[in-house]
Image (cartoon, rainbow, N blue to C red):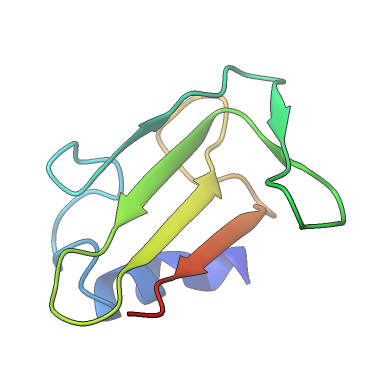
Length: 90
């Protein structure tokens, strides 16, 4: 799945085509340092590990939030990367 994330982020409009995945206009660093981990309440399985990058949908309709592991260098996604996708219900 993580090798498909760049395409998904562009198709979903979270990152405009041509922008870097790590452009701070489109996303932001998530508060996990390298080696830190987090598993949101109610989820099971392996925890997402830092560093991570966060994307928030800004369009109409229910919101989407994507949290994905970055490579320690910060210039690519981890391979494979754990992803947490959250969708609004409103």
